[in-house]
Image (cartoon, rainbow, N blue to C red; front, top):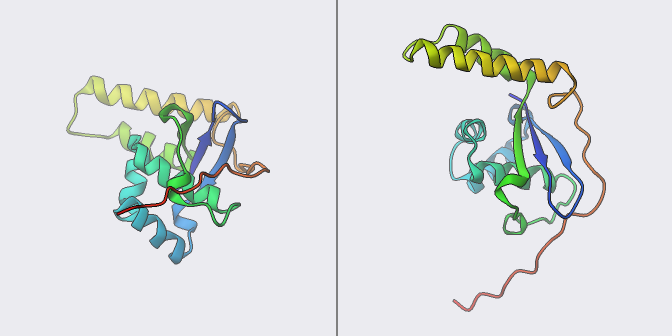
Length: 150
């Protein structure tokens, strides 16, 4: 299940990162589970539902690929600066599932089908779900850790 983490800080250029939880090494997956405080599957579900904690954990992971010493506490952003974009394969699965979904009103089912179709159409236009997502060059900002007096 592939995601694109789009990070658009107010004070810097937009950045896009490929995030594929199925392609993680076990040690990295365990790090993510510890930081998220849940399973990798729960993290993926939370990313799809827009969880800010899940976004922070995923952004921390992708930034650490270039900045090995980046601490989780250094990853701080405005809520609107990070967007999770679903990969085309996942969108196709969700679109197919929505077409036969039961347990919700016909209006809600149709709305879900239309929403997934619109996202698929958008991905056909080259926006969002490209096959390759280049990571930007440069150094991620870091903050000095406050000394604890506890």
